[in-house]
Length: 246
Image (cartoon, rainbow, N blue to C red; front, side):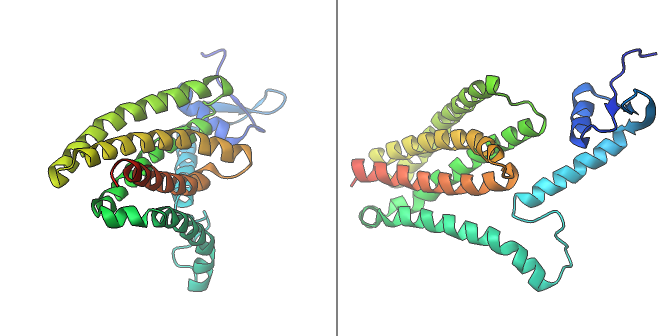
């Protein structure tokens, strides 16, 4: 007999129960009222249903859809629900295009820049999305505190630095083979490293800031991350190229 079981009050949030089941590897747990009288039992299958529901909701939020989005809803209703998401993405894409537009002269002088700059932005976006996924999970499980935030930021920046050096050198070699320009290869490597560092920092801070201001980190982080990594990726790469190559 377990004389000190893990139990839940009838007033406890469902998310706390799901977190406890995952943390303590529970199969079942009693539910008690304010007088500590057993009024029911919570089982792992019910918790899994809740976790699946939350996972489904997050997957919809990441692409701008709400939980009540109906696959067979009327065309007008579905279109209206997606306007905001598409509008925000269009706005962020316009910002990135204006960054590129500021370096039109450099791109005209060195056409290879147009072929290489999407790689810098893409690798930054992937790096940031990995970090965002970890931070959102940490927020959901209440694992992030002010005490360990600096450690997490330093860790993610260190990981980004290692990956940036590795894949930056790989792309530098590929660039050198394709274009026979050592300076361009060096710019490519440095731009990838810097943008991956920026993406990691944004990936940590975006969800935390959005949660602090009462916004959904799942939906908002993806939008902000894409805008920043694209814009900064283009700015860093084209800026370095303008200073060192053109």
